[in-house]
Image (cartoon, rainbow, N blue to C red; front, side, top):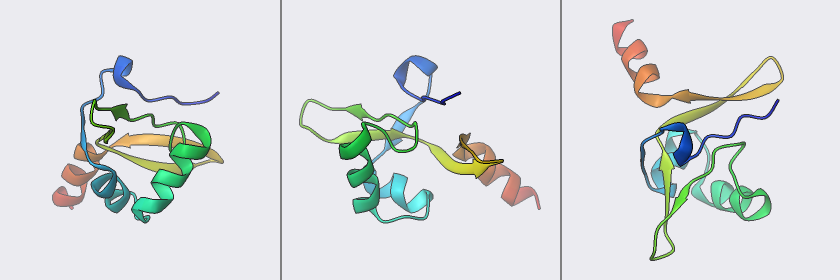
Length: 83
């Protein structure tokens, strides 16, 4: 089963490509290359603005049990602060 996260899932699209890449611990060019090749970054589909820029949801892409999962970044940050 493939996870597709897009605007219809109710995600908030607030991150630029650079911020999304930084949060996912990769270079922004890696995100751009994957998006150009597949139309998403491991199932996460950005919103394309009228000026051509991309806005990404505030999620962290992780690998769990051999499957890709997108986790809410705000929840992860709150969990890290509680520790």
